[in-house]
Amino acid sequence: MPIVVAGILLQVLLVAHAVRTGRDRVWVYVLILLPVAGALAYMLVELVPEFVGTRRIRRALVTVSSVADPDARLRELLKQSEIANTVENKRALADEYLARGRAAEAVPLYRDLLQGIHKTEPDLMLGLATAEFRAGDLAACLATLDALRAANPDFHSADGHLLYARSLEGLGRPGDAEREYAVLVGYHTGAEAAYRYGLLLQSRGREDAARLQFMQIMRYFEQSSTLYKEKNRPWYNLAREKL
Image 1 (cartoon, rainbow, N blue to C red):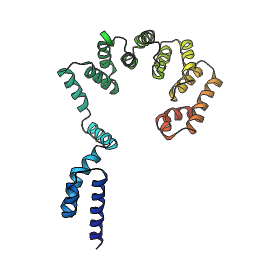
Image 2 (image 1 turned 60 degrees about the vertical axis):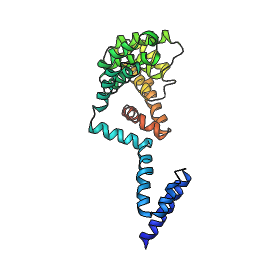
Image 3 (image 1 turned 135 degrees about the horizontal axis):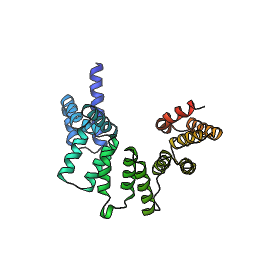
Image 4 (image 1 turned 135 degrees about the vertical axis):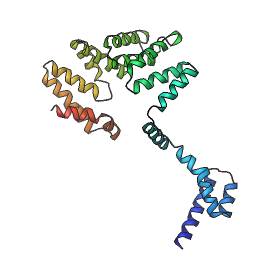
């Protein structure tokens, strides 16, 4: 009896779903006249594809695919770039190299993209600067960011500003880096800038100012949203170790 009741309930729910979502009216007759076979067919044809098509499931499938074959996307992008050497394909390939920690291979792609009408495109220039920084060419990163600012005075990027400050620091210009960090922490939405600023202040013997940065990171973190905490927990943990 419970199985019969469950079957009837499922049939009613599927009919209601078909009507509410505007499915073909034929489904209603199929579900009524063929309760078991109709229900299975409806779920396979209508519900499973819809479920797989949701954003969360797509992300899960991409994750599983990347674990099973981590080079699949890179191979596909290389193939597409060979078939059609378009700006979009080349940019996607450069972004993929950068995401995979292969910045040195991304640098020439970004530089090649910065030609013609795209010569001063801010997002591409920022991509090049990021690749140069991660490849260890801090001087080139600074030069690219200076050119970016000169060509696009209205473009603002906290991540680009952080790269600039870190490059100055890495090139042995702590005074210039400190000035950039002091401005950056006023608007950077993450905790990384404040943590790196604190480290720089600490390295220059300004312990009280450094401690203040670390304390502010902890206070803000403890009052923030779950999403913020997920993104910034590593910096929070590092700041806590400094106190």
